[in-house]
Amino acid sequence: MRTLILLLSFFAATATAGESLIFLKDRPGKNQVVAQCAMCHSLDYVIQHAPILDRAGWEKTVGKMINSMGAPINDADKQIIIDYLAQNYGK
Image (cartoon, rainbow, N blue to C red; front, side, top):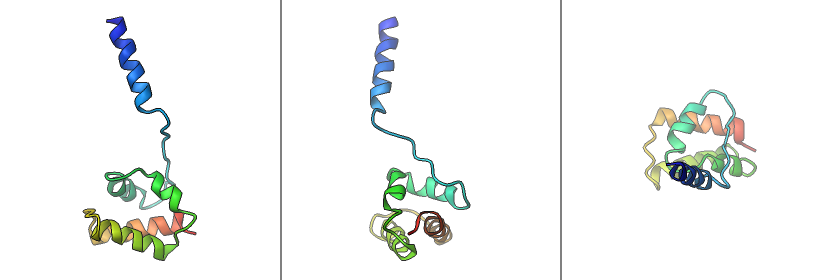
């Protein structure tokens, strides 16, 4: 039993090795970004693209996620997500 617990602990630790938690700014719209965007990809995408995307870039990116990738985001949430990203992670 002790060996089993040690093995499970080892696998749990190595399963998350090299990963870090992403903490987005706690502002209006964050919940929609986390709920809608993180279902398909890591939230580090937001942090990585913040230095290069302005509002137009975020609009294009969110539009691509919906139109090309099939993200099930309604129009109201789309605008909230774009506003959040542009205001908090736009250049």
